[in-house]
Length: 227
Length: 312
Image (cartoon, rainbow over all chains, first blue to last red; front, side, top):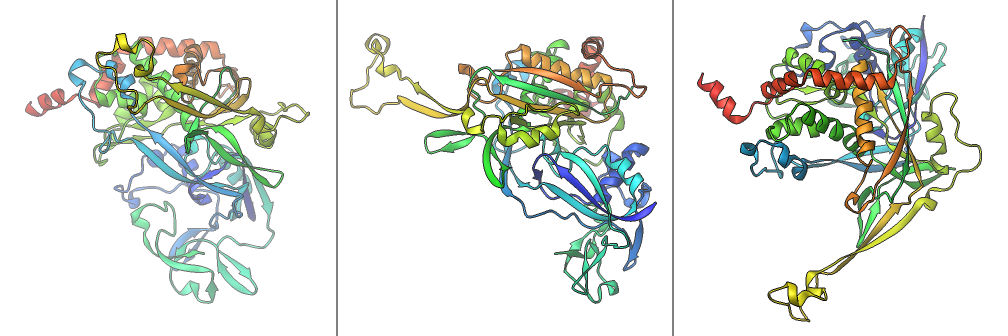
């Protein structure tokens, strides 16, 4: 049954990078379950017109001629702490040397190129939760979120581990795209710039994608994002 | 390939020697890796084992080395093959083509690489393993650990020790041959008495022996062979001494691990036996060792082979 929900991901480890859009997570998970071959292997070179979108249980609205899901941008509380973690990677030449065939034992450039040693900084925030406002089918969304164990970047090394997904009924209050604050409409998610933003506050204009996949250049246009 | 439900592996590792998993230096002192934890509305800096270190030392390094030895590839690899198996590889060519057959072959032949993911020369392949960071079992981490433990498992009710109780200091001296008593006999030319000395005292923080770390692994939509590959890698790490962090050359970082297996069942609800999972994985690698070597030579040909192919 369609309804307005506040979805909260309670975290049991700090969050790396930026919190993700919930509609993107749902699309990714459903593509995996439906066995879409582009689920893992979608690149910038593949035109989106060739692809089928997975039918996630979230309402859609057309804002300034672009269809967007009724799902707000992620909202996080003020972090309890914020720090930089460095992730390192290097070829241990002392370990590898004897494994190589004698003709392959050569000097290796590790200051640049494919074997460059890395010591990459990553922004980490200690936040207890991330939440989104969404209009959709709770049961369907919950089914998909059940197998999402972690969110954000660097999930493979233990960041953004989700302890519990929680739903709160918002009744008739749909805050997924616009919310009301002191009688004024406030933007809650990225949308295409245009007439629908008249009398709306709380956004900045930029260039990016208003709909999933948010990183794909085919979706890039002038957009308004919450700020 | 048979898929099983997602499963979790929980581990408790006890430090048998000082743990020196460092994050940098403060003056002349090496500082242990810590992260902020909210405890009673205050931020405390608590020692932690990074997921990156656990993933490499416990899984990729041991599992990759096993494949290399079992397939008879020791001393026969090229640098790209070694880089792929032991470090996850690097993207070195433009990714205009996605060779699905190559990925499928890789995932079938080497369950460990499907688990960990990695980069072929022109395509990045995602993994299915989430490694949890190593959390020190202390009062400050109680809430976090409790959330990660499986249902029905509780930490003891009595207050745990605070993290600072587990932190100590070490100090060593690096000798210099010129300062030895028998330097006159050893060296052809003994330096002047007022020459600059290289004798060095170095020190740092460590986590004391006896402390316990909780860590774990989440496996998403994996096959029994992949679970077997992970448990096998963990066993190899444990059998090889179970070292993590720095200074292992002088005995630091030795741990003893115990494993708890959660949700280890297939889609029909049949419980999976970890011992059988490991033996199946070992048998799989043994059976496919020639195919694995062929796949590696195909995916990462050495330069001479590439040139031969171009001539043809």
